[in-house]
Image (tube, rainbow, N blue to C red; front, top):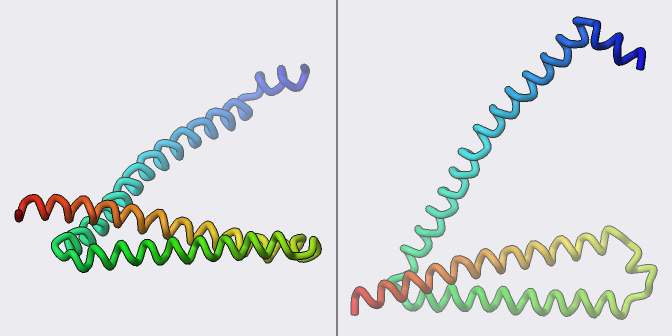
Length: 139
């Protein structure tokens, strides 16, 4: 209790406290003003790239079929990979499962494959929508 009253009476303690509070507010405003613009720019670049892919593929049924086939091939590879991983962990001895490097290596690669599949699905959905709109306009 005496330490608190000593700190309240000391002007250097007040200066240090106010200085760091103002510094925290300033840094927070700088960071928060920079983050939304960078996120917005990143979203715009991704949307522009997606629209360019849709624009290139929407007029050609063969490209739409190729992109759809590519998605289904990727999905099949992922199903086979995850089945083999499940089989490996089901049939392997417990000592092999305890190795964290193997476990996290297979886990991270599975997540990466699933991420690519989801992104490919988003592209395919947009291409098919663009192809349907293009077909309606030209018909």
